[in-house]
Amino acid sequence: MYDRVPLDWDARLRIATGAARGLAKIHEGNNGRFIHGNIKSSNIFLDSQSYGCIGDVGLATIMKSLPQTTCLGSGYHAPEITDTRRSTQTSDVYSFGVVLLELLTGKLPASPVVSEAEDGGENMDLASWIRNVGEKDMRGEVFDMEIVSGGVEEEMVEMMQIGLACVAVKQQERPHIAQVVKMIQDIRSFVYSIW
View 1 (cartoon, rainbow, N blue to C red):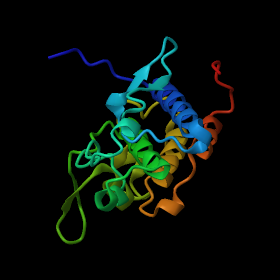
View 2 (tube, rainbow, N blue to C red; view 1 turned 180 degrees about the vertical axis):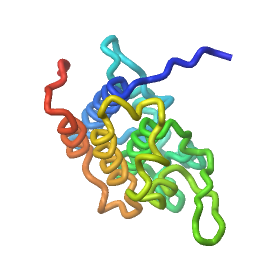
View 3 (cartoon, rainbow, N blue to C red; view 1 turned 120 degrees about the vertical axis):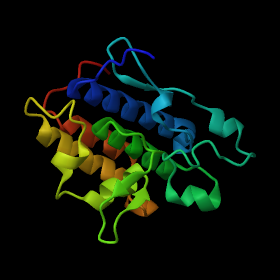
View 4 (tube, helix red, strand yellow; view 1 turned 135 degrees about the horizontal axis):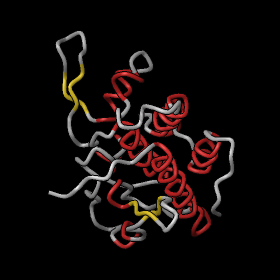
């Protein structure tokens, strides 16, 4: 067993900010045609200032001819990947949204969460569970209790809304990653000290 180091809200916000900026840089490459194809929390590393950095870049392009199963079944894949097995920038945004939800809840995306639906409950992935819970019980039921303190709940609700926009079921309803970067930066009025 290893000693787990809890992340406070500021640390999670820095991770989200840096990772969003990194994904935006990737999507700008090759005249706006690059994709990552495997966004997940284990591919996000921290720099010296504890901002998130995207790793595992370029493998999706190399493996273009192979069926992409890297995200399938992991809880990070967008619904359309199940049918097409092709990653796109919008599927990257979906996967990034799952990372945001993971940062907010402390829950793994692949672990089925039991919903207390009218039919007695059902298992669903993290994104579906949060969509199902909605805003009614967001604060009490969804957020990681390790970070719900110090007056950051409103910021967490804003980040949850960003995450939910990213995991929209319909591709055309998801924001572009540049919009996601702006929305995350707007959560706090201060300007981050990097970039």
